[in-house]
Amino acid sequence: MADKIQELSEEIKQFTAANQEELEAYRIKFISRKSVLGDLFSEMKNVAPENRKAYGQAVNEVKQLAEEKFRALIEELENGSESSASKAPIDLSLPPVVNLGTVHPLTIIHNRIVEIFQKIGFNVADGPEIEDDFHNFTALNFPENHPAREMQDTFFIESNPDIALRTHTSSIQIRVMENQKPPFRTLAPGRVFRNEAISARAHCFFHQVEGFFVDKNVGLVDLKQTLYYFAKELFGQDTQVRFRPSYFPFTEPSAEMDISCNICKGKGCNVCKYTGWVEILGSGMIDPNVLENCGIDSEEYTGFAFGMGIERIAMLKFQVNDLRLYSENDVRFLNQFKNIS
Ligand code: PHE
Image (cartoon, rainbow, N blue to C red; front, side, top):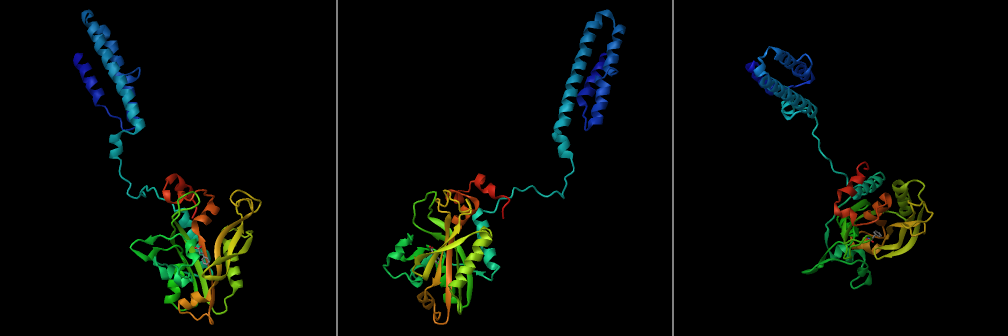
């Protein structure tokens, strides 16, 4: 009889259940009322009285062992035991789970702007971030020692005051115009640098998109229509546009363009400082001097140019209220742009 008990407890210890059916087989065999353990209890009457106590104890121990094992088997099946998981065949056709990043909000706006101008025939040009004085200032009609140079707080390369980080993308205008023949219908996006204290509203680097159109008989009306089209495409067809006279050394006349505040729809809010209008770009007719500086005959060709800050437009589109967020790489910020492209 002791052998039988020993045998059963070995069997219990060895038992594994790979699925519910096997678990049920275990339950029937070791736990149910008709279990083999029940049989052992009914054997009690055949055991000699002096051995009954020891026998009873031994049977109770197997019973306990069987119940513990049962609980363990259930748990293992519920959690999908490691051994059975590792035995599962690998599905090679499953696509890998990759946590994809998001398109950066500045890239989203950059792409939108490029798309809008590409539809009306603009191409895209690039230029260096480290520029010389000629391309960043002189060719753009900033006379030497002219106070207009101070409008832009320039980062110079210490050892060479002729070399600086470009302060605007207008330098690309010069590079394209001096190397190619008109007509031009070009967009020039890029990063620019200014020596400003970093705050919610200013940064020492930001991004601009420059655009310029040079051909025979280009007039102010072309500038206005192009920018009307752009503003409505980007901010919606009901967007109002207005031009205010301004000054840039490289355009004459010059104008800044405002759009009706897209946040309060012109009613007045703290983004538009309760004026109902927000400035989005600078523009103007390219000064004949600039064309001549690039070897273009200003009697034959005229053109317009415009430049806008991508951060500012992204702020208006996405209601971002702190410029620093764009370069901090905080995933809580970036994840908010997940479904926009
Ligand atoms: N370069 C000017 C700026 O950075 C913007 C501008 C570009 C204005 C082209 C007029 C024409 O402020």
